[in-house]
Length: 554
Image (cartoon, rainbow, N blue to C red):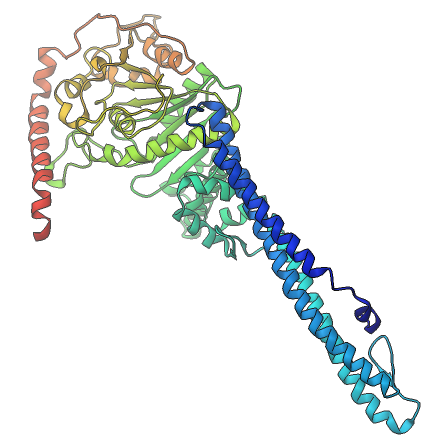
């Protein structure tokens, strides 16, 4: 209990100086962080894995310093305002005690007053009420100042109010609001903010809005994986609550929730977007592979894509990321009455997916810089996925190595050059003879960018032979099935070529064993399809040309 004698003996003269020192400390923390960031980015000639690791860590430390500075500044404000309140309330108490004692009243530690003259009993009760109320005011101000200082301290580690977190920019708020504010930040600002939060605060934000956190570039992969797993658990709980625990959606979610599966992105809408990680990203990895699949990709294909990625991981010991974070065409050619955007003949889905892939590449670089500096990245685009990868390269996607595997083309942006910031990037192509994708490569330059097998700076690799069949025989990889069969055939030469690129080896270059384009009989079989594809492409291009002029009338 705070007594009258305690309050009257307090030395409050040091509090203003303490507040000033705290303000100075807050300024120095901000200056230190800003100086470190400026120095880290000042040398234009410094680049590479060490630069990436250092700048990523400095950005995170700068975020933590700024959070600490905000807490210190809050403590300074609490000290300054607390001093003012305490000084005023103590002065009022001192004056009231002085008046009582001058009038001959005895004042106890609790503020109770007495007088030797019984006739003054009523006055003693009056003074007791006055002194004790002023003592209570001092105690309240003391408690208020203490709580403010403790609050500033708790804001450093999130150990305070379990219903709030520190928001980007300083003040506290509800965890779901923090997730919304994070979504408005550029990715480069998300990671420093996120890592400035305490583990408890991160868990609050993930729990409040796992769907947002799990799909935000800038959030570390481990936390995105945690958030996406929680999203799936919540969706499964919804299915069970609605009595659909045995339905296809619940079954699919249970498959995705297998303990070994880790999703860096997950959005069940529009057929299902996802990014799945197989293997661990660490310093011992010989490389990291990002595989972008092609036409027909949706969440229902995640098991087969995962199986192929697991085989590549087993062969290379490199983590493999299946990147399907976008809408993919579901047919090569369909009924144009329903629109062309969902057809592989249409490049618009590649144009939409490519910026996200380029942005993801930057976040992968940050992840590698903090957990596995120097580990190289290989991006593999298969079929329509190759068109996505090529367009991402046109937009500046960084990679150490790129493989165009049975790729539809080299990028959908007309006349745009690849602008990979890594001057030493190695590019490879892989297309088996007789694969119908050669037709798109040969004649679809205006749509998907042209033939990667003959593009300048691209090395065409040998597709060779399939793995042994049940009789131990190996067959030339050719024909329509050769478009994708090698992805699930770890003993094929084409699969081995991709594995060698991932681990930094140089595979065998292409050996001409059969014609690229299908034979005449096969071309007859696809003649009607090609004719329809040409009509669709013409309709699509015409629509794009007239769209700016017809938009006001739609």
